[in-house]
Image (cartoon, rainbow, N blue to C red):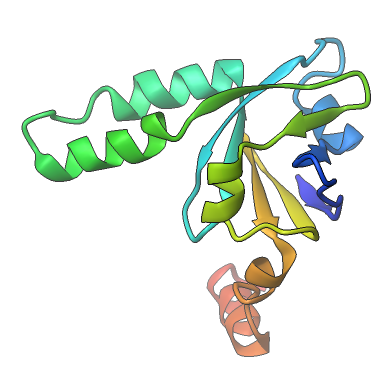
Length: 143
């Protein structure tokens, strides 16, 4: 979990925050992430095991006879790619995903339980809740 602010270099690489790499498994060596189109104009990044669980547990179970399900599967699986983490802890994000997420330079990376979200910082800033939304959420949670 958490919010991080690495930048994108001229080759389309960004650092995967160390705390998130460790959160994925302190003892495991994380060499690869699966990234794909995310919701709300972000990129989602999964560890291989979580990606497999997501695909097998949610996507493959969708009825292929429903055109909307086929569209969902195409969006998420068709946009997916393996990203190796280099020795400096960076991944190379393909141009089509950078374009989709409007990422140019400044990035916000969020740790979201079983995945990461990679945002253009200016886009993510537009999704931050205002005080009234936070107050309502706090009330809903009993705070």
